[in-house]
Image (cartoon, rainbow, N blue to C red; front, side, top):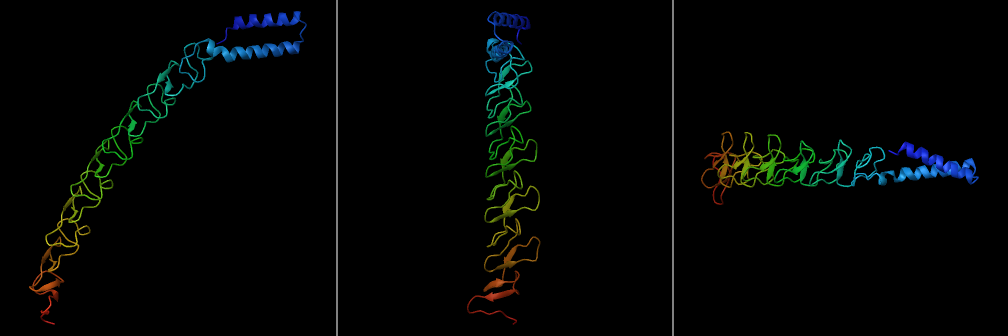
Length: 253
C-alpha cells in the first residue's frame, strides 16, 4: 500500500511549487493525478513482489502477490506463489500452489490434486477417473471391476479386446474359440469337428459342423458323425443324411 503520510506531503509540495510558478489549479490537478498514477503503477516494483507474481502486489504488499501467479506457479493461502505439481500441463492458479489444474497425457489427478501415472496399458488417459486408473485400455487389456478401475489382461485367445466386457473377459474370441456362458465371459474352444467356429453358439458348441458331421440333439449343440458315405446330415446319426458322396444315394426316399 502507498504510504498515506508520504503521499499527503508530496501532494502539498507539488501544490506549493505550482502556486509559486503561477500554474492554474486545473493544470496543478492534472500534474497531481499523473504523478499519483505513476506512483501506483510503480508501487508493485518498488515493494519487491513475489518474483513469480503475474499481477503485482499493490494490495497484498511486499513479497506477496495479488491474485494470479505466473506460468507453472499457483497462489498459496499466504498470498505468495508456489511451483505447481510435477507433470502439470496447464498451471495451478485454480487448484493452488503445489497442485495442478490439468495433468499431462498419461497422468491423472490424485486426491491431493497433484499428478501421478495412469494405470499401465492405458490408452485414453485418466484425467477424469484419476491417477492409477484408466478410462479406456490398450488392445489386449480391459478395465477391472474393482476401484480404481485399472487395466488388466483380457481372456486368453481373445481377438477383439475386452474394453466392453472387462478384464479377464473378451468382446470377441479368436477363430476356433467362443465365449463361455458364465461370467467373466472368457474364451474356450468350440466343440470337436466344428468347421464354422462358435462365435454365435458359444464355447463348447458350434455354428456350423465340418463336412460329414451334423448337430447332435444335446445342449449345447455339438457335432456328431453322419452316416457312412454321407457328406451332409440334418442331424448327427445314421438316418439323417441329406447328401451322399458320389456313387451313393440316400435310402428311404
